[in-house]
Image 1 (cartoon, rainbow, N blue to C red):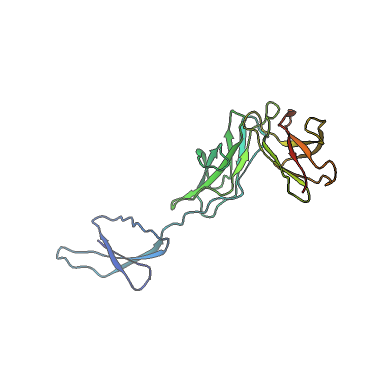
Image 2: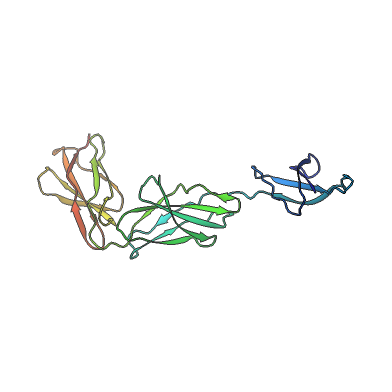
Length: 249
C-alpha cells in the first residue's frame, strides 16, 4: 500500500510511505488539515488508481487555563484550587510550588475535562503557589500564567510578616510594602501600626488583605513616621515585625 499526502484536496499529493499493513500513523508538525490517497501494488508491480479517504488533522494542543485561584485558610489540611476551562482540553494537571515565581513545580494531581477543581492535601502552614496545564491527544499546554496562592486553615496565630519597606519620596502618601511570613501560619489580613517615633506608642491605623498600603499622613510635622505590621487570622494576631521609617516628600 502506497500512501500519498497533500494539504489540498485536489492537487499536490506526494508519496510519503509504503506499508504492508492496514494502519499508518502520520507524524506531522503543523496542525493543518491533510488529505490522503492510497494505491495498492500487485505482484507485477502495477499500482491501482488512487482511492480517497476522509481528510485528517493533527489535534491542536489546548491553551493553558486561566483564572487559577487557591483557597486561603478555609479548609482543614486542604487547599482548594479552581481554574477556568480551556477549549479542546481532555483534562488538567495541577502543579504546586513553594516559590512565588513557580520556578520549580511538583505535579499534585490530574482531573478530567469537566472537573475544574482540585483539593490538595497539605500538612504544613506554608503558603503554596499553584499552576495548571491543560492536555489532550495533541499534547500538553504550558503552565498557566496565572498562579493561585493558598494555605490551609490555620491552627495558630500568623507568623511575622517579612521585608517591610516604607517610601520616602512619594508626594501623596507613605507607601508600605511587605511579604508574607516564611514560617508559621499565613495571615488572612494584615494590621498596620504607626508611631511618631521609633520607640513610641504604635497605634493601629488600618487593616488590609493586600500586601501594600498607602498611608496619607500629613506632610507637616512630624515629617517622619514609623511603621510595624502584624498578621491576623481567625486564631488571632501574630507578632509585629520590626519598625521601619517613612515620610512624604
